Length: 223
Ligand SMILES: *[C@@H]1O[C@H](CO)[C@@H](O)[C@H](O)[C@H]1NC(C)=O
Ligand SMILES: *[C@@H]1O[C@H](CO)[C@@H](O)[C@H](O)[C@H]1NC(C)=O
Image (cartoon, rainbow, N blue to C red; front, side):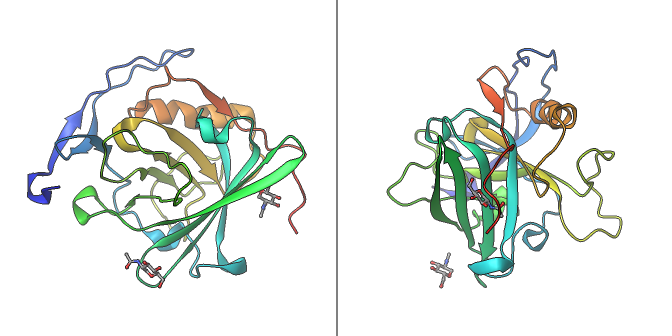
């Protein structure tokens, strides 16, 4: 890929959200000649998002509130992700969920993407197992598009105002082909989750593809 050829463009996923009528405007994206990548949250700081160590209790735990449906997570409830980091900035990822009565997990790594894509853009790799990457895209497949400091239910706020960590994030993928909402809070009222889904649409992610609010009830106790 020729990084010099990267252009910041206005991608226009001119789609109108299904269900609710949230017209989608033009949103900033980076184009590498093949794919469009959403721009990450301005001023993104990984330390406000992930834990300081690759393993163990210091990792940050995030609960999925809603997501575009994906084959690899079909029938999954109680979805969460634990994020740690190596000193070199590579993030460690462990996704967990419950299918039926069975809890399962998958581990991966997410090195930061080239600086041209902005801080907050990563390329998650689960090894041989399926990774959510659009066909032919070589750039980041995990972009923290928006990071909120407010607790769910409070007024949406992307300015720190003395707070030290993000509480809820919207993550999008290459070509805007997949999104999810994560929060440090596991149980969030549906009305509040829907407020974040409106933001997902405003950020250029088409709600015309099926999506679901994640079931976070009756989940296994934290060990
Ligand atoms: C960062 O460090 C980890 C652990 O040593 C290593 O596995 C990984 O490949 C490194 N990533 C990069 C991009 O150098
Ligand atoms: C994450 O989810 C798994 C299965 O869905 C569950 O067993 C585990 O307790 C959860 N972790 C936390 C910290 O909530």
